[in-house]
Image (cartoon, rainbow, N blue to C red):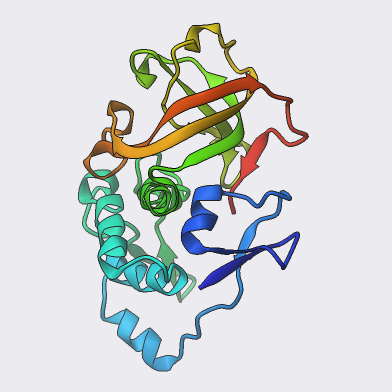
Length: 237
């Protein structure tokens, strides 16, 4: 399945590219060119599976450039009993209201007790695999903000962006550790244009977030001052 930008239908990318890139260069969101068709038999089959099984089916239909093993690994690592308090990440409760039975889907069992956990717990896993497919060993150049943190490791900082998946309350900084000898010269939260080589490998910053604590680790080739964009928060939908 391929994806188009909402701002430019001529921009076509794979699922892995859409996940890795976040938003299109023109600021648009990536949407599927078409949607899978689910018939009665599809829904009957889904009824026989648990939440993880349904998630694997839906993700496989929308992320066609991921293997079955990759999808399964992401789902199993994201929706664990440890993170969601049980084997069913999103149980259904039944409530009687004036003689009417209500089916209530509980989306608050994740680490932050918010529905956004359903997306944010699997996103790092999908992102790691997407980056490896698209960028491992390659050189990237992008606009980022500087985050000086000890979590980046010795001689490193984190270039990234503030991102929002739903609303203002869930804005968080998303970035990757980057090795840069002159990192101390960079001002906190300043904007930079960075060119760096990407390697997907182990780094302590990914501990508990991605399989085997692996993720994209950058090695800076050049770092130059950048201009603050008109929209400084990246939005995922």
